[in-house]
Image (tube, protein in one colour):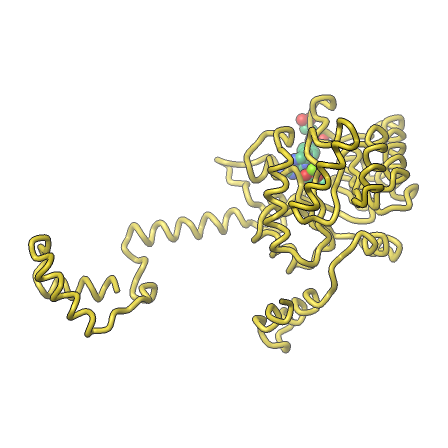
Length: 333
Ligand SMILES: Nc1nc(=O)c2c([nH]1)NC[C@@H]1CN(c3ccc(C(=O)N[C@@H](CCC(=O)O)C(=O)O)cc3)CN21
Ligand SMILES: CC(C)C(=O)C(=O)O
Ligand SMILES: [Mg+2]
């Protein structure tokens, strides 16, 4: 499989191809590698993706970790929050991502309602993400209150990434998507939550929307890696939402909310729109398709036979004279 992929690439002299080759030759990332990166003081790179093409791009771009986030509900399905996202939604998207991304560690979010009840129900749900979705591990939002559940999953052979600070699934009790841990007391709670998650056996923890100093404190105190989002530079790694960093949906008429901590690295929405508009205008102005894009030819022998057939069998329906017919046939075929 790898050999086949490599043979499709441009020759080795090309520096871009060389870089791509090196990426493809690197082995699958494991939860162990994530810990090693932290110990070597190398930043862990993580990004979300939700379908086959985005997963392929994330793989080629060389990320360590790919998250199939419940943010899929917002950026792919147009929901206002992550609350309505179901386990089946996540599994559906995991399957597509798993076909596209071979090297990154695949992490699936446990969506709202799948891990707050009995811990054995959570285990069953996590098992479905692994068996049906094809991911390597799961992410669970919450701190001390989720410790027992995390422990059960890990004992059941499922690696868990924690998620503290802003927990979008707790929007009902938090009152909105807003920064967390801005008082020393709240920061202490976040540190306790992160420790509880670590002690329950999590291999890493996401820390979302807290002040840099709080993220630094948590990172200094924990042994496991921290992955920050909206939490400044002092974490073991960073994660962003695919659509946010690529500028997928920023047109003023259909803008989605993009958090202010997100840097925009591309204007993909703009280039999609320009491409679509050009195609539509070409069709409207009879510029597409021209001969170049009409590749299926008919031999002149067959054209003669078709002409005879049309003239005899379909003569009543044929309103064109002979010349017009020939020129039409050669235009279309
Ligand atoms: N597209 C997208 N990107 C994300 O990063 C993301 C999602 N969706 N959905 C789930 C969560 C929610 N996210 C957010 C959303 C907003 C803020 C934010 O900046 N909030 C303001 C306050 C807004 C208010 O008070 O309502 C803040 O200053 O904290 C932070 C994280 C991060 N996650
Ligand atoms: C933003 C990340 C951490 C996430 O949980 C998601 O995309 O759902
Ligand atoms: Mg999430």
